[in-house]
Image (cartoon, rainbow over all chains, first blue to last red; front, side, top):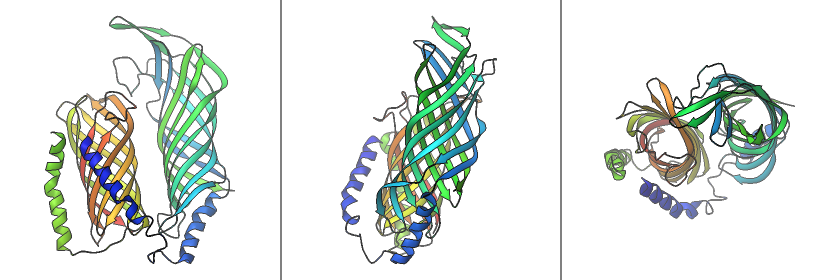
Length: 252
Length: 179
């Protein structure tokens, strides 16, 4: 399979220079007036600030570890709200396509999120599904990051529709508390220790990835978020959240 | 099944696609913008986890033409597979495919991110996720029906984010584009 994949890429690379440059400005391009209208629909919508509201089905996982001692709790999947602020778009680079553009864009995205992890991942059991054994950690975070993305659109000429994939790197103000169970290997078994943990609002490294279809005011989005890179009570602490959601954008 | 077994198994279908292309005439179609939906069988292998998996794959994409020769197709894909062992595999992926069109035919290369869940005895026993690379070839008729042959290699094959995953898969997809 590896050979097949490599061969495919070589074939595609061989073809790469043939058309992309030669076809620029060809007679196959749509009339410039139509193209201009199409570009305006997407660019106009992204040139102002917006609030994004919606709902998402997510799975969040909370982790603390120090050496071999680890605690991991999940919410086993739940419905959570989407609440984002998005700044106007800054276009870093722009490549015209047959209809619309491929744009490398940059904005600032702020997000509010909640953590409610009450199912413990027990060693030797499911890696994904936690068990309800009385442990729980809950919290909230406010995150902000410059968000760089590739967007392609419109999908249909004349509409405010595009696809976007982007990555953001910033900080999150996160607080949490609870009573996770820590597991430490002991021969072929584990020693389980319940211990209260608590963190006041502190800055964590924040990363986010988003894969998104946009139609009019509506978005379908797959999103991942990670908060980490800080020790709490001597434990490396992180929260990961992945989900699929639907959201509505309000421009102002 | 060996690495070349998948290609050998797909060869008759590719031949059928070629024959169909000749039968309907050489239509110099250009890629258009629109949404597409594809369904077809998938065959996967992961020697470190479950051996061989067979199932169905569903793909949705949004094709955006760059010019008459090239298009970019962001897509999402899910598959459900049974294996030789008491495991079921659910694999989801989101990626971006570049297509080079040659008449009604295209060659494609894709970069993707996937998450594979291994389900056994009613619970998910393992999850691996990470990036993948692959290529595709396909043919699209004037009536916008298409057939696509796609292979992917995942992170265990030199793109390691999670350990112990050596999944690769191949699928034949039949689909339609709404332009």
